[in-house]
Image 1 (cartoon, rainbow, N blue to C red):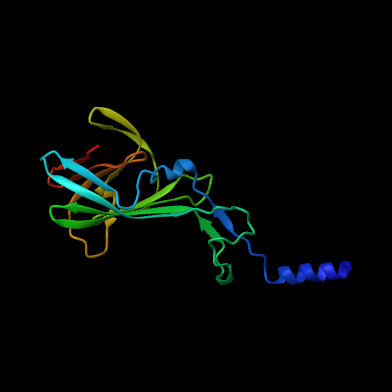
Image 2: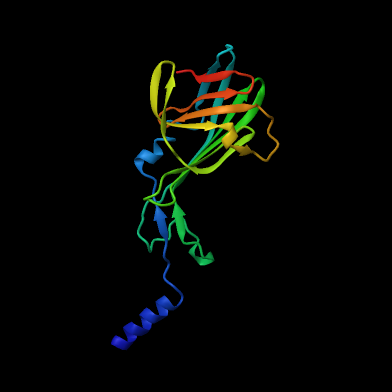
Length: 193
């Protein structure tokens, strides 16, 4: 009987056990996108009294429900994949002066003991997956914590056929989303609450 058990264990492990490394996003991580819902409309007012509109079109949350290492949820183990990192995507369209621009935010966690990573496509600029460094920002005489400040000089050109808006700076807040963005023409757009 012991030989039968040994034979079964050898048979099961000879092809490899389905191991999966999973990293979940925490509830604090999900705050970066919790305030967004598909079909939301957000308005922005510029310092020149112009108005832009942001439409939320897609919100995807891919967060493993079970982190047990032998559970292969979300992984194609047959093809050799063995990792499942929690990530979320929010895709939006910005309507600016009659043209549509893509805005795409991605938040992901690769390891539980490492900083959260984020990526942003903002019109013709791309901020590739970077560690998120939260800071504070003064906005309309109010201090906002948990912000990401991105200068376009730290961004790459977004390959694609998007029109150029001339983005200069972006301020993204964990609780409100896109707070402010400024353009090369010295216009600054603020969220209208």
